[in-house]
Length: 200
Image (cartoon, rainbow, N blue to C red; front, side, top):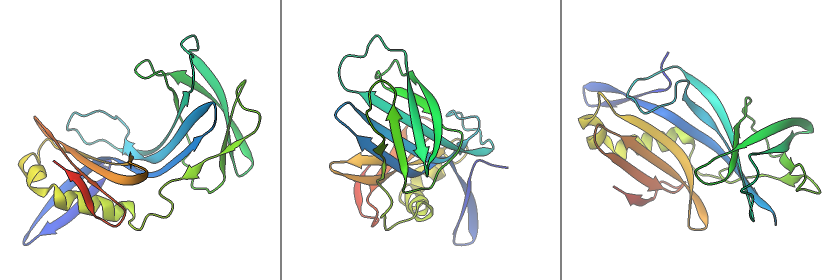
């Protein structure tokens, strides 16, 4: 079983293109004390850029950035409330940007996801799903990305790995599709109406 197989036909030939990571939900919240994001999707169970396709699994990642000096903290405790079901999370510090992160075992699809950070919050704060009203589904975003980067992907078909994520672009959120080849990376950034905003 591959991580994700996207079959697309060109004339009489058929190639198999692979997406190593697909992000289909992105939540965010910001308070006076921190900002937090919550991402859900599918990715390879053995997640690394090695050109090898492995079995896929669902994933969730929560990231919290505290405002102010927190260099002394190595971890923080947070509570995730999804439809009144509360889970306790321990987020470890990311040494690269001083944020705090942890994996979430279950993927949620809900309009009611709230967070409470111990010793910081006074109440639960509501996450907002930034792609809830996207006009384009992630399936169509994948197809669009493969179409736009087809020449590069075809040239690197034995090694290429592709990724679809959601990124902030100015004041809005957009699809970000990129392909990692043998020696270079190509990308296309496009909005939910499939308008290209940037491309390499």
